[in-house]
Image (cartoon, rainbow, N blue to C red; front, side):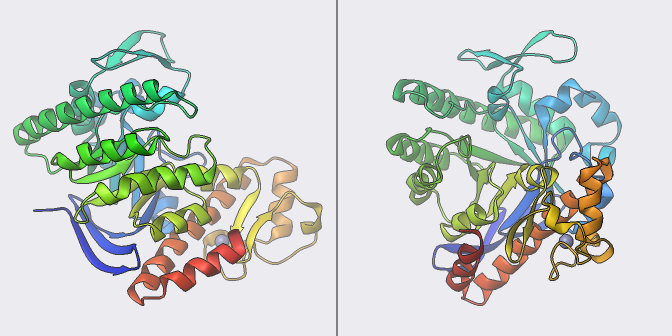
Length: 370
Ligand SMILES: [Zn+2]
């Protein structure tokens, strides 16, 4: 039985459902990063109020603090952070771009703990054990991500490690899942850097394994946009349509729409909240910079069309005042707005596909964000 159900297609854009242990997610959808069990300045209640269907946490970082055992004692990640929505957990690959990464071997990824400096290795078995202990709804396999600008040889080696770890992750996950009677889904990850032939090879291989969904990883890491689209386009034809497709790390309105147009169902990124904290606000008329002094006496909301709690209760003049005096509550209020905007965008996206007018919707977004 597959976890993804395709309900309708409009061009390449897909409207579907992803079935998980904590319910069904209507796709396409966006999930914010609650990396260490929370987003910055955002509480679990804020996520609920915004109406986001899912969150993604990082299994590797949570395993360091507070530790997978502690989360398990708390009754799993959902109970620990008091969230009843759907939770994804990411594993290792992306952390290779962070300061804690040391090196890699055929067996796994080596890191140094930022808290007590001890060295540790993440192997497919270790990360599968951690992700099952956290009891997320969707676990990600261990992957090896090569950086933007990597040579063909470097990218190929990372892809080969990813493939080997993918097979191992799947085998170990099935074995442990049975033992624990878990309903956790496992997604595979396609690598291959920005070499179309490698992306094709990787998509074919990962797709041939029995994963519940397929992610395209190693994009949105500093490359030009057309390179990102090319990497995704090189992989997509080789991913069967009955699996959910997830592009990791994408969260700008334009990029999301452009990838939905190419047949992607699932997104995650820190982009909307990071932009918000820097004063860049997504609105129905395009991006607005709340740091500009022209807002000093503007007593209208960030976006007249927005129904988020920030827009209902506060004006641009007030938010401008808060950022000028660097009040931490500013970061919460604008993060709520940007996440609400992206979540609404996804709802509109699903409706447009259902009503076979996605192409027009895409043009409208391009006009404002292109
Ligand atoms: Zn708003």
